[in-house]
Image 1 (cartoon, rainbow, N blue to C red):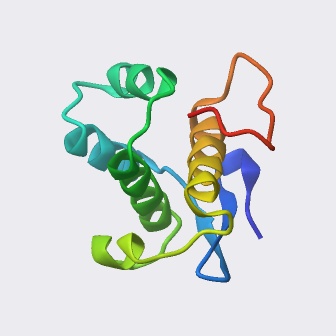
Image 2 (spheres, rainbow, N blue to C red):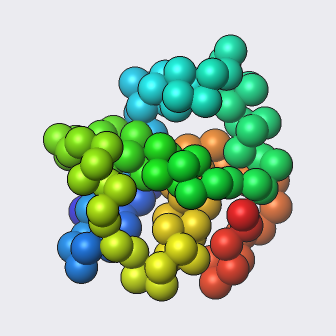
Image 3 (tube, rainbow, N blue to C red):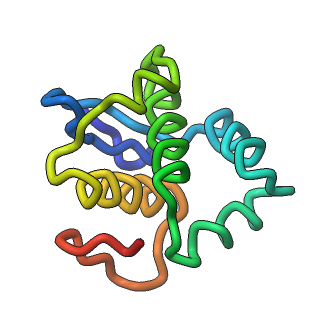
Amino acid sequence: MVNKYRGEISARLDGRDWTLCLTLGALAELEEAFQTEDLTKLTERFSKGHLSARDMHMVIYAGLKGGGHALEKTDVMNMQADGGAIGFAKIVVELLTATFGTSTPVDENKPNV
C-alpha cells in the first residue's frame, strides 16, 4: 500500500504493481543524471513539459529504486507499461506531481508531457 504523504505512487509495469518514490537519494541520482546543480534546476527541467524517453526511463528507474526495488537500469528499459509510451508518461507525471506538487490541477487521463 502506497503512502501518498511520503510521495509514493503505485504503477503497473510488466503486469505487476510497483511502489515508486523519489527519495532524496533518488533525486540526487536524477540531478547527476541530468547534470543539474540543484533541485530548483531539476524542477525547472521537468516543468517545461518536454520529457524524452531517456528522461522517463531515468525518472521511473529512480522512483523504483526509491520505492525499495533492487533493479538495474536495463531491467527498467525492458519493462512494459499499460498504454505504451503514454502509460509511461502518466507514471512519470504522477510521480513528479507526488514529489513536487503542482500549481494547476492535473488531468489524470491526459499526460502533461
